[in-house]
Length: 66
Image (tube, rainbow, N blue to C red; front, side):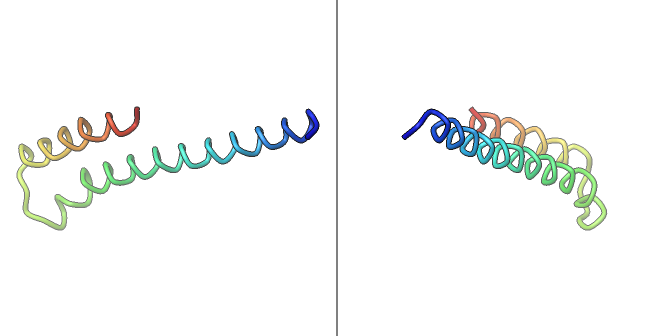
């Protein structure tokens, strides 16, 4: 195994990691936006319940990110 092939393999692996990590962040914000903007129009929900869901979702997802 040469240094060039090792470098190419590492670049390819880090590129996949970056792509998957960014997709996970996109999915988080997409879900957050759906709960924030779509669910009040579809479901009858007061603002206290909605903010409770969003705060809980935010605090539960942060340990998963670490």
